[in-house]
Picture 1 (cartoon, rainbow, N blue to C red):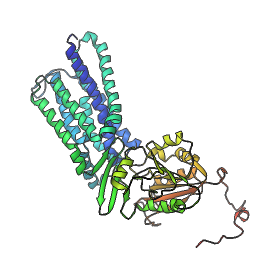
Picture 2 (cartoon, rainbow, N blue to C red; picture 1 turned 180 degrees about the horizontal axis):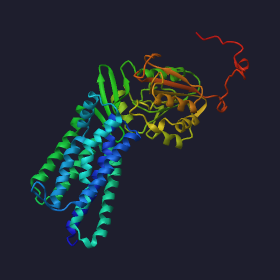
Picture 3 (spheres, helix red, strand yellow; picture 1 turned 90 degrees about the horizontal axis):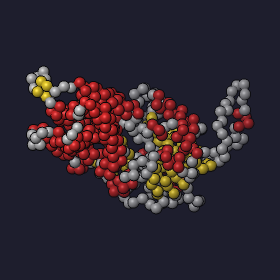
Picture 4 (cartoon, rainbow, N blue to C red; picture 1 turned 135 degrees about the vertical axis):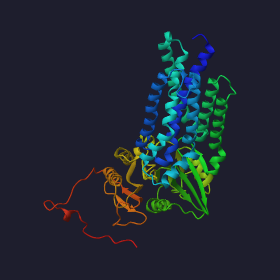
Length: 483
């Protein structure tokens, strides 16, 4: 192609189109987490809703021929590209903006659609399939502008620029824009780029198409503005969490991805399960004269757990580095004490890279079914935790499960935890109804474990009618119970 300027424009279009598709995929995954969770099941549906329409878009774009259409209008390659981008913008405006997503999922919940796989499939069908299909036609449509003799070389170059754009959409959008400017502003950037692409492709820069693209970009910027975020009480919006601060009387709440993460009042009241874990594991060692204890908390929330303890040494682990500032700005009455240390790392990465052992390890990263971190409920992770216990150390874990083991999740999680930690205690909080049916609500269930002073291995010894040594094992006298 002789016109270098036009060649630069076309390859720029391909680059930016690759960026928009991948960043839109990343945004769709991130924006739906508060409503359908972050499991591999929902993730796979969103990825499939991008890859398959993209493939069909490549095929459709390759079969397009300029000319008169069925409606009698003459459509050029340029008009087809502009039309595709305008339609994609209009649909993505509703599919990527948190304001509209919140309304969509709220209505879906009210209509009785609560299955997360069904919800994410419906979302993907309505808001991702068509835009990706239309944007996927860009590369084959752009190829019309190049000479057939150099098609192999040009195709390779277009795929190179498209892949570079996809790389930037995956890395730059999540690690730079979402992390430092917020998810809502990352959405706005996508619409600015699409409006810019329409302006590049349009013959007349002030024709209806570029003006419509500009209007859609302004609407996207408005729907994702700081003002809208403030009106929705959103105080943090990065690649990990949509953080909402709510004040109800004297109660200050931090809600992370639609889960009630932490609460704190002027009188020091916290979530009931937090106070129970403190009573179980922290209160007995908070003011004792013995040497200080090392305590690890996996899942920082708003750092309310052990907040009043100014003596023992705490390490908090959470992947979101903004949580400490959010907690001190909105939830806690004063900054954390010098005995509290925050490590903004994934839990398994921290445990893999640290040799430190702890007297108490508290697992509080399980906010509920939708926000369950799948990699933190495996026997391998629990064994990692166990390896970081000191002799005679304690583990306390909070899970939101069925108190009567209804459903496979509650049963398998119990089996998995006991595979790593034998002889555990299980404390059911809230109303425990032994006669509850399958629809019994999930509640906080606290698991606690005390490590032996010396590693004695796993004991699977049982009492049986044939080999019963209970007379050797049972105590010969009863210790007086402390009053």
